[in-house]
Amino acid sequence: MNKKLLFLALLVMVLGSACALPTILSGPGSNNSADVANILKISSDPIRVSPVLDNALQMEAIIPVEGGSLSVVAADGTQFRLDISAGALVEETLVRMIPLSGVEDMPFGSQPLAVQLEPDGLQLYNFATLTITPVQEIPVDQQLFFGYQGAGENFALVPPIASSQEIKLVLPHFSGYGVTKGFLADVEPVRARIGGDAETRIQSAVAEQLSRSRQKQLLGIEDDQPVDFEAVFKQYEEQVLKPRIAAAGESCAAGRLAIQTLLGMQRQRQLLGFAEENPGMDTLTGGLMDTVAEVCMKEEYEMCRDDHIIQRIIPAWLGIERQYQLLGVSDGNTTSPVLEKVRDYVRKCLTFELRFSSQASFDDGGGGGYDSNVESKIKLQFNPNEIKIQGQAPLVNTAFEFKTEGCSVTSNRGGSTFEAMDFSFTPGNDPLGNVQDFRLLYYPGNTTESFTVACPDQPSYTSPPSPLWTGIYLVIHEFEMNETEGGFLMTDWEVTGGEYYARKEWVLEDAANSLVEAGTFKLYHIAE
Image 1 (cartoon, helix red, strand yellow):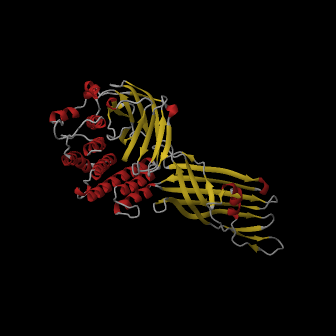
Image 2 (cartoon, one colour; image 1 turned 60 degrees about the vertical axis):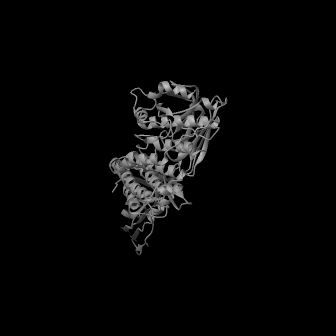
Image 3 (cartoon, rainbow, N blue to C red; image 1 turned 135 degrees about the vertical axis):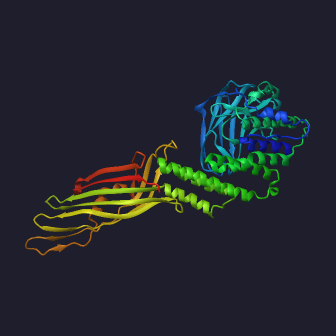
């Protein structure tokens, strides 16, 4: 593959969110300033298509950060294969491919073959490749590659892999992609309406040039138009990259855009052999990542603190840790002041108070038995080193009465320690909604009640400290014991959200042993 074609393919990736470039190519036949002005002129009536999804044929798979592949076959037999390279995803992601049965309002071409990739808009940190294999071959000079975003907006041309005889598209993010049968000349009447923003119009212009060059190469036609690589890199860095880095601290969205832009440019230089000519990139990357990490985690923490949105912050934190590794700023085993601050945001967000109370009683059937009540307030807090929410607190024996018919009794309360060994939650489908359920692994503690019994004509008896409340609790809750993890497991919480976030209530009875126990867990979210 010659350098020009490789460069154009990579340039489109970096231009995924470009606002302006004064020139793209230099040399004979290149765009002049008037051409660029036209490219950047946004139409008041941009093209919008209407994709018709064939949801019955969709395929999905969970793709790890190591990468993977997914395929789907359309109703007409067209095959679509998505290859996601290692490092493209920040976290394990559910990827879905939905073939289209049609694309209404297409501005050119015929018989469009397309697929929609979800999650829509997902930005990739490395390239993904979409291979399209039609049932009926489309001649090379009649292959037009297109894409759209969302429900059909920002329609544009997209770049193919220039050296491939197969139809292979280079993807910087997820949206809709396809091929249609037509000629490049068919684009001319609607060129001014392609793309709803500057980035898409630039992408489309470069993709058109790349498609033209691919056709010439595969058809054996000489095409030797030079590209001024260094000039393009310099223009892009000055006019796009640096302004975005300067704005990275304004919001998490601005910071992520700056990271994506830098990653794209860095990949280009490496693949073109220019990486060693880019001094200071490590310092720039490190400073930028620190800025983005802090602003993004601050936003997540504030949502957690103010709106009790607790399920977003761990994925956000792990994503930042992964970004540090992808950027080469961290090897995953080291830390920094900013990473420590990020982890502290998670710890402060995931702070709870768990209030436990229980009333247990035993009736011996002859007027004797005992009642014992306990309660505990446990601070639960996330531990970034163990990636666990844990806590422990005194188990207070608030009331204890031992009863023996015809005798006087002195009852002595005796508490213990409640241990929350692991506390976690199942996120809901809505990232801004409540969690679905909680999972509490705990051991309530061994109480130490005692009593002194004085009966007529008998010496008094004082019992040693004994786990009387615990004895009832263990019997009544035997079905909740998890022997593998060594504790009791409590699930199926009533989740309400807000500061008083969830509760679990029960009244249990063991009639055979004359035992009754009623208890409550109340969970409060009290972010620091």
